[in-house]
Length: 190
Image 1: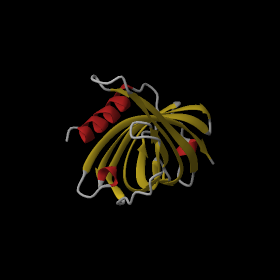
Image 2: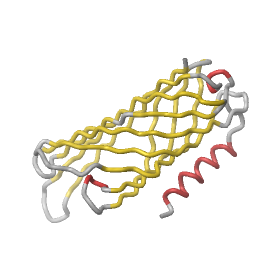
Image 3: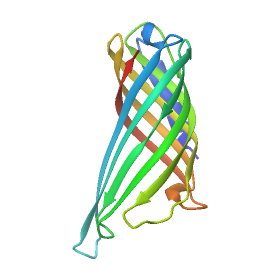
């Protein structure tokens, strides 16, 4: 249960260690954000008693839209699209589609580096190459802490840590999951 505290700790640390914080224009009330976040994971497996090896690949892309309801306060909606495959159990693949809703707060101080924290919820559905029936997975809470690095007045790179508490984890009833991760992306503000 220490995982949510890790995300909060990282977010607070980023805020304290940032010497310059946010630009003012893109984070003002009425601004719109279009963004994309990416995750790539490749894991190789081997068994100590066999010569066999296997590999798993996970690719995630999450386009999202945000609207600033007040200065520094953003309502966000994202659509995670995840593709996973492995050759451990034969040629198997899975596609996951979901939706995430959240609130972000940006620590705005006038520079080009912007720390932020957020919380939200999500849900996901899966299908695979073997037509397995899956439960809907719920994520509550979804916690995030990150840093935006602006390279123009209206575009930035995003780096974030996240924690997801999963209900129906692995899309199976009565499994709880705790997911911690890092991801990167970009944003354009309109």
